[in-house]
Length: 352
Image 1 (tube, rainbow, N blue to C red):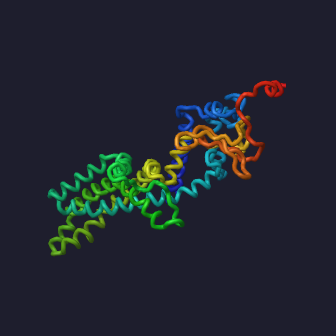
Image 2: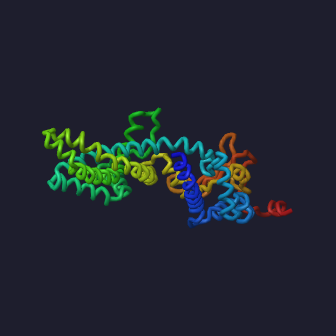
Image 3: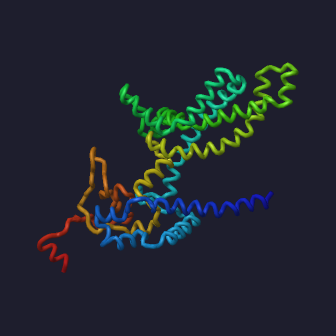
């Protein structure tokens, strides 16, 4: 047994390395150059090469990967250049939200699938069976993100109401904290419940045709006892196995649902990091990155006062924060200065 476990673990190591390299490389292969955007919005370096050197992006991607992998092995996951917090702290803060959403979605999936699957198997080829199978096919066919979007948009258009999309902490309002997970968890669990329902029906039908079940019928046992005690227990073995796959599917679906319903979980963190090119860099590289010139208190804002691009702001006792693409300087320094080119005597004095 020990040899088998050790062999399986050794086989898993190359798979994990390949998967980590793919995950590490894909964000850097996305269209758009964050370094060029940073240089165009604010003078964070003399030129592209200078800024890439400060960020550590001038090295080949395999060298960046091995540096990152070495830090991960030591337990240092780096610092998010967007939120200016350690990655471990971000994961610790957001992981409970995703676990709550996934666990509640799994509860909904099992609660819906098992009764309907048992009913469809016991009443095979009846109207209830046809209706249950049709619902299962519909649940597998309708995309969850499309259904979630309709749930948010249509009530707002018809009844001027929409589900809450602002996260509420448990300490602020426990009831609101729990209820905000109900709707996204229910929609997230629909596809999983459809798959579990079809598998429950198929396995229960197979079990009910076994000899020991026919013997229980011949002894005059009640239908409830035969189905639940003799049939469902054995039929649940493959269902429990498939539940592990459904858990991975549900956790993967949280990326979309957390973004739609405004839940600050792991999926939302991943989505924002990809959109803002929040490449994981060493904390010391973030501290070395300081803007050359920027207007005092400058912060670009779009419609509704939302910061866009790479605005700058200064907090009390903190360095400069770069809003929009997640690059920040943790070390305090001189106040930001204007990025506009100097003119007149000031320009000549600067050139001197």
